[in-house]
Image (cartoon, rainbow, N blue to C red; front, side):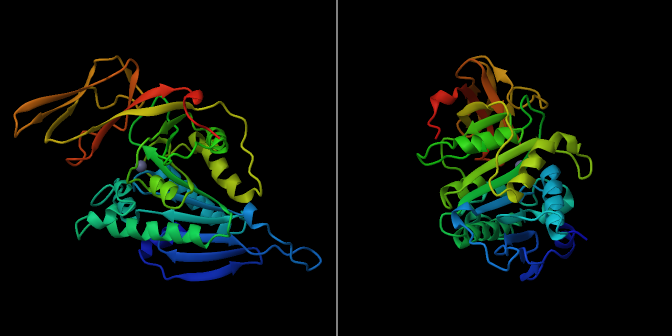
Length: 352
Ligand SMILES: [Zn+2]
């Protein structure tokens, strides 16, 4: 039984720590969260090779924040299994989190509420019976502690792995969280390109997503990574995910990871975040419109009827080729129903 299967069956796992051979320390934190770290490598003559702490990376892969986004869960399950079988040996500290085990069981995005709106403390504003809020609080704490326990100078990475609900012009894309004034990272963009990422959305304000938490609070290179379209467990064509899978495996086993050459992803900046404020909210394009579909300036994208003021509100494209992403008319009131995007050039943003 794999670690994921054990986690999903038991729902609680006791904290335990043990070694694999002389090379890897394993720490089970709880159901769905496991950590690996290289033991000091011992050379042939019995001498201990000094490890340069600045070369050790601290890497988190989280998956299943949305329980029905199966492909990344399957990839992380395979990675954990290979590490535990000692066919993959990590060179860095790696924590793998299977986030929403209960939502996986029912094959849904979530049980009570969208977990990816609960980070940076938002979990404390949830209803007492929220399934996701205590889990988000726990994951956030484990992430914070994992990075804090790493060697001084260790670079920090967090890839929060998802699949999108709908088809997309660029099926594989990332959201680059707001960096509080820091520059975008050239190396990260090249790694993501090598992982098959075709588009990067630059989020230019704080959010309550998991990746923003890690970027902001833990100063990690952190991304929300969308690896393709949602399919049920076992129905993913893993060929679609080869580049991403290779990246996730190679990063943890390479002392110095070098990305394969790949075209620069298309960059988008968020133009509008359209919120659903009223019950009568409607999107003005069909349900199966792919992500990144572009609309002409002035096109009505969404509308809602304010029942108290009896006012009709329209949301329109403000520029030509304004593209849509993450449309969802069924979100709770006060939440984001649609993002719109503007394509930009790499020269438009600070990249170091
Ligand atoms: Zn998701």
